[in-house]
Image 1 (cartoon, rainbow, N blue to C red):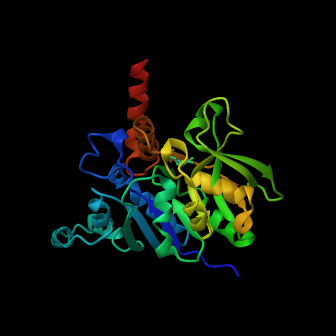
Image 2 (cartoon, rainbow, N blue to C red; image 1 turned 180 degrees about the vertical axis):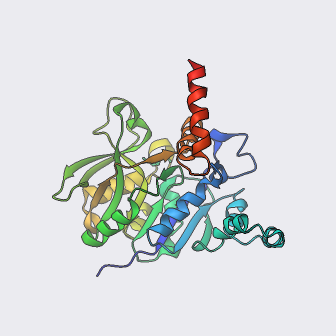
Image 3 (cartoon, helix red, strand yellow; image 1 turned 45 degrees about the vertical axis):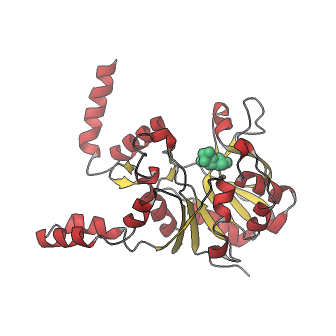
Length: 296
Ligand code: G1P
């Protein structure tokens, strides 16, 4: 029987070293993308796909995340007194987005290890995992499509995107076979961050997964892999190769994805999103054109 998936797990225990010193005292997930912290986009995406329960895997230095999804009574009272309805709505919006839960990862031993920390909370239901470095444009459908496939196939579903062959060393890479369904592939093998020239394909895992609860048993027996870390990709490779809990399928995403994981991509993401915003785009666009003309 198909479960209605309600739980999202968001690993957010990374140290954010690529953004130091900004992330010295603040979690990288709180870095603003235009005027919203990156993590809020991810929670909003989960909620838009019908997930109502969010578990964040956090670590030291991550209190700001819990505060962001909670009330901030003094600020709300001040805005209310001033009658600043717009800003009050923005502040209050993130308070009640979802039923938020937090668990700490302890030792940061990799993405697979972070996901394992969700075991008690998730129980025996399929669940979604969303990685905060990847933002998916809210106008493009991905997660709800993956949940639908999970329901149809009772299998593990991962999000794949075709990337330039020069980029494959930065991702988990899938070997795939076509299915009868457009944009759905059967995953026959997975490898985490293959070194240059050894990639089996250019189908990269982007950070969205709908997992069968059986992944916890597999992760428990997954040895440290790339970088000495317990890799989710390695556990999924085992599930694909041995057809565990229905095997693994990929939904191929062709929409807009923004990477906020490193500084250059983060800057690009902000510009791309700001240009399209009705409140900022009309002023930003002409300025940007002039600015880039002046660069030449
Ligand atoms: C993680 C996964 C990798 C995946 C990537 C997507 O890597 O391990 O398989 O392709 O996310 O963003 P990370 O970028 O966290 O090193």
